[in-house]
Image (cartoon, rainbow over all chains, first blue to last red; front, side, top):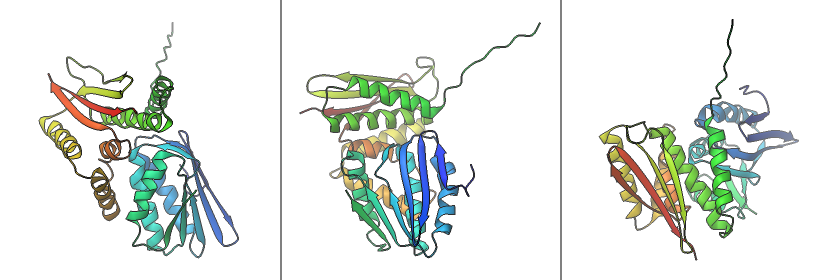
Amino acid sequence: MNPTARTLDHEGLTLSFSITKDTATLVWSGVSEMRSPEAVLEPFLKARVMECQNLKLVVDFRPFEFMTSATQAPIVQFLKNLHKNKISTVVMYNTQLEWQRVSYRCMKILFRAMPSIQFECL
Amino acid sequence: MSKRRNWTIPLISYLLRDLRKFVDDATQELPKDVRDASIMVAVELASNAIKHGVSVPDAEAASIELTMSPHEIRFEVSNGVSSPDALKDLQNRIHRIATAESKEQLYMERLQQMLDDPKETGKLGLLRIGFEGRFELSYKYSDQIVTVIATRGIQ
């Protein structure tokens, strides 16, 4: 896995990272069912945090179809890391998917004390 | 004379993908929210069996059974248990979820632990089944085999 690559493609999960002017976008799509997601995701996500210094970030989970609970911890640490690095972040999720509606509502509560992380549902 | 044989090693993501398809096909007639929850429950229970299960004389492999009636959907996932401590831990966690006044509160507590400590990375699957999936959890144990049972009513 090459953490400097801007796209992560692993066993059905795709993370696509792009930068336009002052805004970076990270789109999650597909499914995450790998056994040790932290080993795959953390190097990639840490590299993206470094790239987002002085940028706004949109993390778009709307095309993310399914994940096992093992993927939750790397996502929590990623968002925490963005807050620690003072990166203004908007997390977008899809309330038409029941698991996203429930999971991200809880995440919104979890991160309510971190105002740099905002949640928007569609 | 040389000989060559191939043996395919199934990867966990492919096993779970096949399981998702199996449950999706089997639950076509159910409301979408129940179907989606059922797929999640099956994958979480199977992941636990793969992660924690061991082979024992009466259960060399783990198994998953899906039963549907007009009123209920039910999963039973069985696997051998590695140790009395592992069994006790599983029993305690299921009991805690099954008897909780607020499953959401337990789920939030676990997320908070994950937020506070990067080393806290697991033990969310059963909570997800109970809270997000709205399935009732129970278990039975016999002859070194534990069976986790998840049921949800169908309106």
